[in-house]
Image (tube, rainbow, N blue to C red):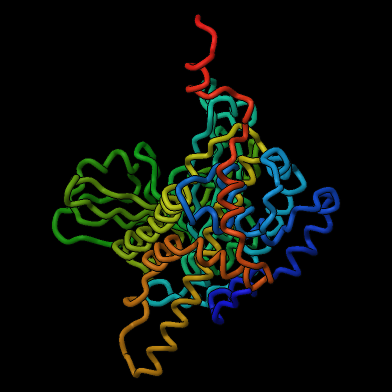
Length: 439
């Protein structure tokens, strides 16, 4: 048996997703007792690294990678397909939830404008396109199918802190809980979460928020937080929409009042005062408006706009999931397989982050030995590292399997198994031409 050289990356993956723990979790399901050919660790690495190892994320492609690594060429497609049942999906969900809660990249320090916050949490959702036949479970509208991925990303770690899937018609706001998890954190929203009650709950739980403002939003201005020289238009006591088109100042910084239900559906309203800031966009000559509970003494209007720019990080994360891990190309209508593949895409992302973290640590150690003062972030940027992981994911999986005690597969047998026709009784074109009936 070939023994590969020691790898800190392989060791780090094993620490993040311990084999013994994966098998122990799997024993709690009936899947392991029924399926003797299933090695849950080999299957986990096949799926999580298989998302990055090639452009084909079909069940057939995953089957071939599993057989290649686990050396079980008697495994049929039907048997492999049958593993994707509720128990296995629940197991994957448990592994993902545990990874979200416990994985640590070591990159938790926030500086500059962000050093005040325990963390910056970016909340958003995206739609995953599905085959139309899946609309009974994952409805987008009457004629289309789609799942919606609800995600919260930690800016300090680059990892998701919340990952939930629903059908695409579910509103974003309904999937965002409120509570003590916001304490000490800055929450960044797009307009899908525009909700005054939500803003009040964040403030009441010791968190901060920055949200874009709807174009037609109108508030009563109760106080100006910045005064302007000359014949500037007074804003106190005015409504926002009544003065917005006439303003020429570069910034707006005011206190406004807003009303909302004290409790959902109670009909009993309450009024709160929050800060509204606006920064004029030079290209469009219009204001970008934001609601926040951050103080002007700490963050002026341009600072608020700059903080909100961090929300773009979650768009990049969605782009990574959809492009690098092909999350937007799920070629099945089976609800359990859809759910399993979405979860595995998230686990692939987390594994990629774990590997990138280890590569950055390895690079920093090597530079320390060489007295190289260059910053690690400029030497190994996260997305370049992720591309490297993608290109070599198949090799990473091979090293992991060898570390688990598997041997290199019999190449001849593997190629022979992969080449066999799964439908040998279906007549080929030449056979039809030679002896088929004439129509």
